[in-house]
Every structure is written in structure tokens, then in C-alpha cells.
Length: 113
Length: 112
Image (cartoon, rainbow over all chains, first blue to last red; front, side, top):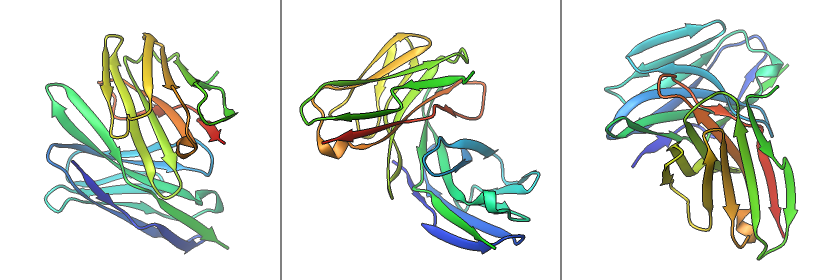
């Protein structure tokens, strides 16, 4: 099975930088995803890491350390519209060509003026 | 037009009733999934299907069943609804060559 931990809630100020951490334990790691979900809406894909290091995409960056079972999502120049839940998800290899995606409980980010 | 659609978007039903939630996709993906989301519990996988002839249980399949009628359609049924099945239900699709899942808009279900 898998165990994915991320903080329940975070608050940050508009224009600032915030880092959302995610730790995981898995037996067949095959990639880590970050999704954004606004209240009552569907999750939308933000980033994907399968190798160690930093992936940058505009204001958002995601980092992965496979040896530490650790990832973070970095949001720069925060905007009010970034207020949402951020879901960490780990893809696990189940068998030949078979994968399963398991989600963490999400981190609710509130951006304040 | 949305690539992944779910019907109904909202539903209120009574304990013991049978209910079906439907999902359709135009992305041409073989893989489809049903999740439920409860406050504070995140997304939990109910069932998934890697093609029309392949159906697999997820972590919380008890009380649910599914039907993969075609590549584009994947239905979730609650044979006898109970109040603790009140939740937000999401359908998702993926392609083995892609790195993400695409989610439908969700169905909000209330069981009284």
C-alpha cells in the first residue's frame, strides 16, 4: 500500500512564495503528480515528476527526491486565484504495464491580501 | 465541449434506492476511473477499467458496481444507497502514454 502525507491547510500572502510538501511511502514508485482543485470543481493537472530534481512551469515548480520519498510544490508570486486545494498523487507500479494513482488528502491553501 | 462528462451533476436520493452515475469521454482513452471525495479524506479510488473487458476494484469498492459499456462510457451504480455514500463522485480517464488523468466535473450525491 501507500502512505501519502501533506499538510492539511496553509495560508500565504498575495505576491509571496509558498512551498507545499508531500512525503510518501510506496513499493513501486512510478511518478508523482500535483493537481490543483478549486472548491467544488474537478482536479486539474499541474505537474509531473518521475526523476529527481526540479520541474519548472511558469509560476509553479515541483521538486522530487525519490531516495527521501519527498516532493514539494512551489508557488511563486501568489495570486488570489491560487486559493485552492493542492493534491499530491503517487503512481504505483502494480504489475506488467499496470499502474495505480493514489491521492493524498490535499492541502488547502488560502491566499490573503 | 468538455472531454469528460458526467450525468447527473447533482442527485438527491433516499436510502435503499438504486442509482446510476454515468461518465462519457471523447478523448479516446482506454483507461477510466471512478473516485469519491469526502471532506478531509481526499480522493479515493472506487473502481477502474483499463479497457472494455478489464474491470478492477479500487480501495473502496464495497457497495458499488460498475459497467464499461464501451470505450467511451463507464457507469457507477449504487445498488442500495446508504447515507454514508453521500459524497462528490469524479470520473477520470487516462492514456497509458500520457502522464496525467483527466477528470470530469463531478456528481454531487446526497443520500437521505
